[in-house]
Image 1 (tube, one colour):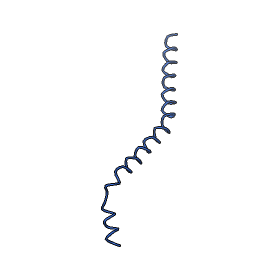
Image 2 (cartoon, helix red, strand yellow):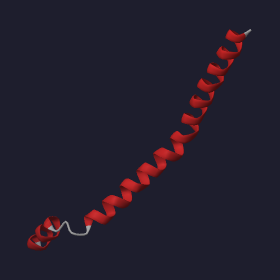
Image 3 (cartoon, rainbow, N blue to C red):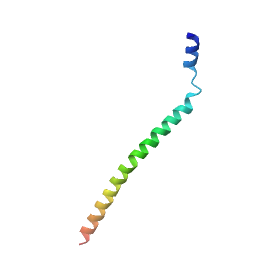
Image 4 (tube, helix red, strand yellow):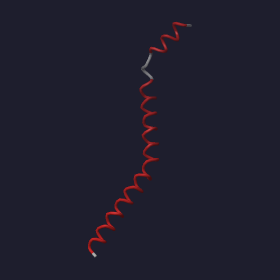
Amino acid sequence: MTDLVRALSRDESGLTMVEYAILLMLVAFAAIVGWPLLGDAASGSANGASNSIVSAGE
């Protein structure tokens, strides 16, 4: 039984696909959570720059 556990713990051939799937899920989650936050920040910066340009022209 101990030999079987050791053999299975050394066999890493099936781990790569699972690791890539977990990494892909983490990246997708970060993108979904971060996209609205990044969009709001970019929108606020663009509006601030636009308002500064309009104010400077007056």
